[in-house]
Amino acid sequence: MTELAVDPLDVLRLRTSAKWRAYPGDVLPMFVAEMDFPLAPPVARAMIERIQASDVGYVSGPGPVGPAFADFAQRRWNWEVDPEDVRTTTDVSVAIVETLRQVLEPGDEVIITPPVYPPFFDLPLEAGGKVREVPLLQDDAGWSLDLDGLETAFSGGARALLLCNPHNPLGLVHPKETLDAVARLAAKYGATVVSDEIHAPLVYSPETFTPFLSVSDEARTHGVCVTAASKGWNIAGSKCALMIASTPETRLLLDEMPEEVGFRTSILGLHGTAAAYADGEEWLDGVLAVLASNRELLRELLAAELPGVGYRMPDASYLAWLDMRALGWGTDPGEYALEKARVALEPGLKFGTAGAGHVRLNFGCAPEVLEEAIHRLSAARS
Image (cartoon, rainbow, N blue to C red; front, top):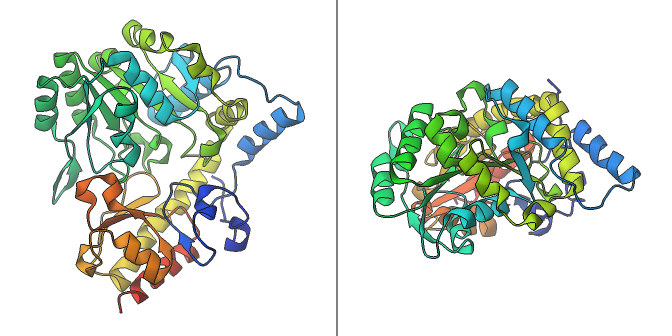
């Protein structure tokens, strides 16, 4: 495992990504899903080698990505993937839209399960469908998919489920038994499950993660996995995502996409992605060690300085879903936090109506930055 240190803020502010350009320099950016770690050396080397070779043209297919991902999936999750079943495109959002276009007729319903990643509200529309919300259930044990609600939606004509696995913004890792039930529902009603597994490399206990296509024959027949190295290795701007199918029926969905869908893949992203899966696991484990410490630090800081804020430590990723309603900062506490504390958080309402009074906080940063953010939020109460 690689021991990682985060660059200091003055170095980070030299970056030109959205995280470091959206707000003035006095704001701590804890909103968008970008981490602050230096790039994994194998990923950097792979991209630099392509540049040095002047190899920045169009991709000629998935190339090394299929074998690299298949080996990683076997090591990490004991999931058998045929490298020939892996296709690429520019990012997971495009992968979702293009997959939905293959299974929807105009106006067909696509189920989403809020609170959920904000683009999920728009991607079905881009594919020509409509959104059908089946909110997650919440009780003292945590969050879970509403299986009865899903069946009601499927029986009412919904043609697809856009599954977030692990679930953003909650860091929820869906149990295998739940995914098996989802697959049986999809088979019963002839629907398609598009499983967005972009946060899967960031599960703190990898053995607890179940890839949807590994669950059952029903899941493989009715499911397509979309994923990327972009979250695990912090390379969203490199523009390479994966689409994986494992039966003749679902392979056909991918094969019938326009050729341009694959052609949009960045050649730099493709080689960086292959390097991440093949040689970046030690770096990834180092990241997870820092994040595991940060999620616990966040719990301690909130208990000490903002005890009214609700927080359940995530089982995956570096995103914390915070219930700020006890602070009395209104339906959009992120707006108050930005104005009074100079901390930029992702507004909860972006994730659906259940996000009123909530925010999403990115703790993929140095512990000192996390401490400063909570200190500022605490001071803003007065």
